[in-house]
Image (cartoon, rainbow, N blue to C red; front, side, top):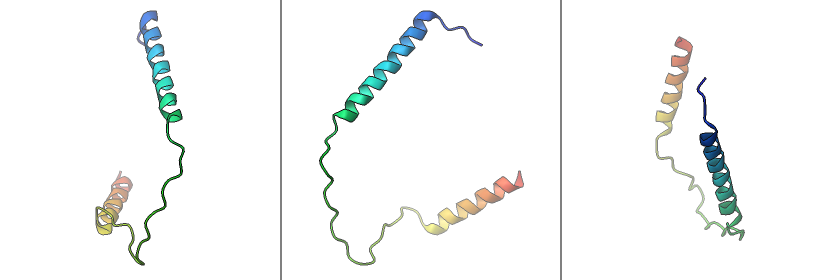
Length: 70
């Protein structure tokens, strides 16, 4: 296993602590107001996928066949 010097370990620990403090500061600075209500939608208008269901289904089936072949 590789030897790590004390100064580099301290620097890495300092960066981790700095990252955690920065993340906590950003989370605490978020606005806590409620989200606006969604606009009313007409009946039957669902979420459209960027790819077709057939493509996703074929990809899943081919993945399962590839796993079973191993």
